[in-house]
Image (cartoon, rainbow, N blue to C red):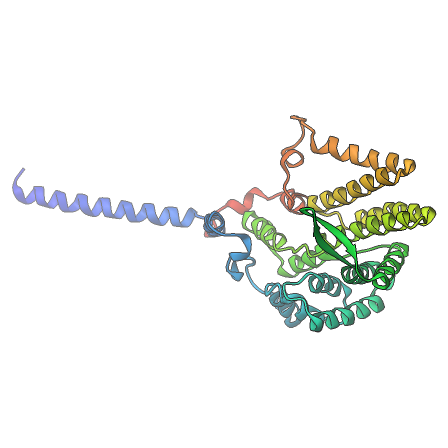
Length: 349
């Protein structure tokens, strides 16, 4: 074979290899599902940063077409300031008012201005949702904070009464709260509404987007619940010291209603159960201190059940029950969604 034929053959082989590579690249490109590729990029980003550090466009494919719905979604994704925007925008919807009230109660910059705004929000919430004990619980916490201060005594923080009138007001609001039919925060309801507006697709990317939106949920009510429990114990033990045994027992026993009140509508996530358990444990310890045998038995049984559940070692139980984190109960309904196999197919066919 002469040199010219060899060179011609080399040129042909080069063109053949190049064309084969181009065809291979084109074939791979045509077979890739771009939404799955986008999910892979988001998962890689998740390894380096928290959910709330994603770009806003990662949470959804497109904003709603409806102008009001679009504003609602944009306001929500501007959290934590979004709750105020939502209450101003949707004055007749109590879902966002309740969430904003709890946020104001334990916000980062609490002052007279925010307390005044909080009072206004609570008044609106009472009108919009009169059967909800939420505003009364919040007022109870506000007054308890004024009534009792923590002081260091023998290297241990002790609660000291500084304003009896505020304490009585706190208890009065508390009693009003537990007499209401329910106490609802609507935090999960708000998120479900946002997810419905986004109209996320039922594929792997859509499922992950639902998870990221749910993971933005704030929990401003957990500390106040503990504070309410502390107030019940403090007031019950104070009455006992004053010789008011009957009133003391009544206060401690009201804890049953308070815990059931909260557990009925506000235990969407595991951490809320754990907070209720810590409150029940404080009631149990106080019942022992006050020698209230009925409450020792009542709270003790609940505490034993909690401890048995926390210490369980059932290897046959689903992983979600054995190792579920504080978001598990909220996210698992999303994860149970059946994803059609067809969604993994190439988008260009």
